Amino acid sequence: MKKSILTGAGLLLILTGCTNITTEQQSVEQTMESGEMQHEENMDMNHGDMEGMEEHMDHDNIPPLQASKGTQELVIPPLLEKQKESDFDYEVVAQEGTTQFFDGSPTNTYGYNGNLLGPTLQLKEGETVKVKVRNELNEPTTFHWHGLEVPGTEDGGPSDVIQPGESKIVTLKADQPAATLWYHPHPHKSTAEQVFKGLAGMLYVEETDEEAPALPHTYGVDDIPLIFQDRLFDENKQLDYKNLMNSDGTIGDVSLVNGTINPKLTVTKPLMRFRILNGANARNYTFRLSNGATFTQIASDGGLLHEPVEMDEITLSPSERAEILIDFSAMESDEPIAITDEEGNALLPFDLDIDGGTEEMESISWTDDTTFLKEEEKSLPVSKKIELFGMMDKVTINGKKFDPERIDLRQKKGVSEVWEVYNKPDEMGGMIHPFHIHGTQFKIILRDGREPAPNEQGLKDSVLIEPGERVRLLVTFPEEGIYMYHCHILEHEDNGMMGQVEVY
Image 1 (cartoon, rainbow, N blue to C red):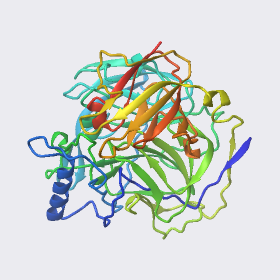
Image 2: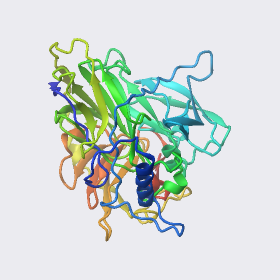
Image 3: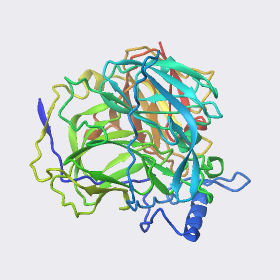
Image 4: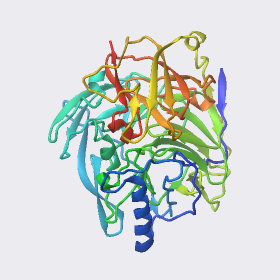
């Protein structure tokens, strides 16, 4: 079956938290007086007084993001280079550093192989590599390969702790379809803080050359990684997590894209591919284009969709990814255009400097003769039930908090089962929980009895679940081991909204 990607004239991205907020657009560079006032208000939203009285991050008090002034060219993470004459292929080092977010105020940060975030690790489908991971922090950490289907011993979950100054070599085999994945720390009770301080990087599984579709694929030119995060800085421009955190999810007012404040991107090609990661601790993003144009989603967490989908907005909860195409060929160079949040705040303005921008774009062939879900998969009975409940530090799964000594579920390797995940509301109505399973790429069968939207008809490892919603997932583990499943609001995860499944 031949399909074509219909590329729109442009793309509008929206950012949203768990709520709708009305606010004036604000710039990141505020006066000292207004900046201190804004940060004091947002700090109050994120943490309580010295008695520990925290405020629930409800539908009325999520701080709005400040709009980008477009003064800094977007930083593109470098590609991780292969080691030469070594017993491993790549090295990833967790380390401390400083980052100059604000003039005259260096901020203490964490990064992989640098001061902030990390390089992009590219693997080919079917490729096996050895990665040396080293901890140069002053605290324990782990290295989790989010979305990669590897044995439990290589997954980098909370049991695989690497102490300060120590290292190990892990074997990663990219035995799965091409996809945009990522890597980040996963030490229990410290994940949220370490990610907040800067530990995150992109991980690509790429098609082999003979299998690659005719999609934009030149890294940093027409194939761009976008890590969207929000951060809250204290009065000293520091990421003082212990004083800024909120148990319901730490949400900031400062927008970062690839670690860049006030970013802009110079677009030089008429058709651009963007690989978007919601790398925030807790904020949900809904993305649009500022000119109202449509864009084409081609992939979700685990790879290409069953078919491309034309959209005018897309919502991603923490840890979710999406690949989209934007056709800039019909746009004027003096036309303001940006990826925005749902309030219209520009998160990533574009400067158009397109070579041959007037040439006619060709459609991209899309061949897929399979159905997304087979009839026998749709009719499988529910074999595992998951209940997500609570807020702040009172979060549980099936009434229990995480216990590293307890196995909660068991499933046989290679056997598909249906998990029904229910987000149980409480007296306050509850909140969105992004549900993630390690070691697998699942399919969404039903949302409250309805088929998933076309842009969810692809492989996933994380799924946004609304309060009161039941979602059925087709889950298959290709490898053996012990894997985590949890809410990907990182503060909820650290507070015990996590379980373990043993695959045998």
